[in-house]
Each structure stands twice: as C-alpha cells, then as structure tokens.
Amino acid sequence: MAAVVSDLVDFLNASPTAFHAVDEAKRLLKAAGFEQLSEREEWSGLQPGRKYFFTRNHSAIVAFAIGAKYVAGNGFHIIGAHTDSPCLKLKPVTKITKGGYLEVGVQTYGGGLWYTWFDRDLTIAGRVLVREKKDGVVSYGHKLVRVQEPIMRIPTLAIHLDRTISSEGLKINNQNHLVPVLGTLIKHEMQKLVEGNVPGESSGGENTKHHPLLLQLIAKEANCEVDEICDFELQLCDTQPSVVAGAMKEFIFSGRLDNLCMSFCSLKALVESTSTDHSLDHESGVRMVALFDHEEVGSDSAQGAGSPAMLDALTRITGCFNHSNSKLLEKAIQRSFLVSADMAHALHPNYMEKHEENHQPKLHGGLVIKHNANQRYATNAVTAFIFREIAERHQLPIQDFVVRNDMACGSTIGPILASGVGIRTVDIGAPQLSMHSIREMCAVDDVNYSYEHLKAYFEEFTELDNKVKVDC
Image (cartoon, rainbow, N blue to C red; front, side):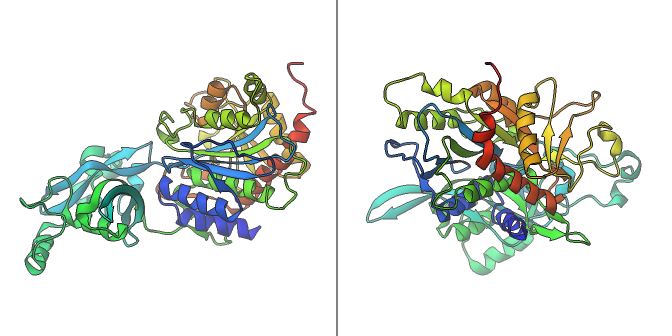
C-alpha cells in the first residue's frame, strides 16, 4: 500500500490549484482508459462496461464507470469531494507600490489560518487566458501556469516593533497585512535602466493593473508574450513540497490535504475498482466520483456542489439508456448513494478539550463518520450503517465524530447534495491536524484505509444495499 501514499504525495505536488488538480485527475483517468466527454455535446454513445469523465470550468471533474448490467433506473454509487482549499487569490488589479516595495494585491479565499502564510516562501499558480493567432485566425485558450521558484513573501513585523504581541497575540488586518512583497522599487528601476523598455508596460508608461515584473513571470510560464495575456486566475501557494515525514515516517506534511487527500483517494478507488476487463461484469449500477470547486466558500457556483452538475450527469446517463419513461431518473436517485468525503478533525494533543469526550477521532484510526443532529452533516443511521458495515467486512477501522454542543459545527457538500438531489448520503473523512493551515498533516495509515474503504464501497455497495430494507 506504500504506492497509494507515494501516488498521493505526487498528486499533491502536482496540484497547487484546483485547475491543476483537475488536470492531474484527467491524466490519471485517461491512463486508466476513461474517455473524455463534453457537456456541450450529445452523450448518445454511452455503453455499459465503459468509463467516462467530463470537466466543468477545468476546476471540477466528474468521472463514472457504467456497470455491464446497468439499465436505466438503476442506482448511482457516488463519492463526492472538492478540489479547492483556502488560499490567497490575486485581485483583478494587483499593482501596489508603497514604501519603496513592489507588492501584489490579494484577496482571501475561504476560511484560512492566515497567520500561517507569513514568512513562507511563496509563488503563484493558476490559469491564464491567452490570445493566440495562427494563419491569421485569432483564438483564445487557457493555459495552466506555475512559477516553481519562490518569488514572494509576506513578512511578519519584528517583535521589537510590536511589543504587545506576547501578551495580546498576533492581530492581523487582512487588508493591510496580508500583502506579499514581490520586489523593491529601486531594484526594478535599475533593471529598467540596464535592460531598456520592460515588457508589460503600456506605450504610455507603466501598466496600471499589474507590475510588469509580475506579468513577465506569468508570460514566461505561459510561453507567450505579455501582450497576449488577456486575463488570469492566479493564487499564492507554498513552494515547500509535500512529504512523508515524522520520526517514523508515519505522517504526510502538506498543503491542501483538505481536500485533495479525499479527492485522490476517491479517484484511486474508482480507477482500481474498474481496472480489469471484468471489473464491471456484475455491476448493475454506475460508479461515480464528483470533485467540485468552491466548497470552501459555500459551493454556490456553476462548478460547485450547489450547481446542477451532478444531477445533470445523472439525468444524461439515465436518458442515454431510456427513451420512453421519464420517471426513471427519480427511481434511480432513490436507489443511489453518496459518500461525501471531506477531511475530518483529529484529536489535537494540545487542545483535547476541543473534542467531545466520546467522539475523539485519532490519526491511524481510519475514516471518520461525521454526525450532526442539525443536519450540518447528512449522515443518518441507515447511511452510517452501510458505510460501517463495509469497514467491518474488510476489518478496517472506523471512527465517529460529533462536535461539542457548545461549539459551532462546520459543514460539507453532503447536506447540499442530499437536499438538492434527494440522494441518501453519509458524511465521512480522514482525520487530520492543522486544517486550513498553509501546511497540514495527516497519517499515512489513514490514506491507505481511505483508499481500501472507498474501493470496497464501489465493489460491494450493490450487493449490500439489496439487503437493506427501508421505506418498504
């Protein structure tokens, strides 16, 4: 199982943004024989026993494998996760010059632990919209970019200039203090004198939206000229790579474990559960992984879980195998099941009071089933039993989590999809520490447990669900 962990670390290092995560997912799926579809085209050629995927905005991806015994009206066995993580995204106008420094304007995305972004070696990554001209014809395409070397830093204020920090703690103003330094004005001006006119400057002088120096870096990565850049969606990211670490090599230290760890384990489970020529011979349902964007900010976007992306997929797949009965989709949804996979809070040894005493998920303890009576998680007794029964069949550890009554509870895409689609749902996740930090940690064992559990779910859900009698 060491290969699963190694593959996860490679996936994390290749995925500094949601765009890159989807691109890496595409590569993995294509290598496993999945065929790419377009939402802009008809899907009339879908066939039982075949595997497909499509992307939306290149930041969300849905992959599915149709059972050889599938007929319209049969269920979908889905794992849902998300590709985004809290980060600092570049503003539409990034150019800031003050105190002799060249700085870059950013905006906070999601609920990050922003103090962890100070004094880190930062770079930028994302996508760039580029104007291309070939044989006199102009077209526009997006290119993924990532500057490998550290080019920015958000420096902290020295303790000598902030004597109250020891007694009152670090106080951050997100507008004033979360501004990365790109360079110094004097060095930039000297470079202009030596090299002459700098690409990125308009004919009338300096570019008014972005520092020319920043545009040069972006253009170099996009392999284009500065004036061919039409727009971009970029974010800051840490240059420190993801690693297997700890004195006994039992941890993974990385950014974006929430939620690329669950995204990868879901994809790996789907790929491996459909890897042989006969993997789908006895499958009567559709195995699916849906990785959404914008979970960290509420999922309300065209590529978020609040969109009809997943329901659109269910509708189109069902419709491809049915041309007469319009009610089969409703039947299929009631036969379907969603595992909402999002990382969970492990017990912290230095803050043990933050966990309810009977619900303390631990690293190396396996996947965590999340419960909340107020429906912040979509788990109920039936869905929890099904997921727990799969673990027991394979002797996999399983844990439970309930937030303390005197603390607010977070949420996931689970309740959004359960209420929006009407699908049975269980909320689960691998335990981790430092969630929403620029640098998080989880356990190697839990990555293996997650993969094994999710793979078993795909392979055994149909048979198990036939034995569960509810609403009879």
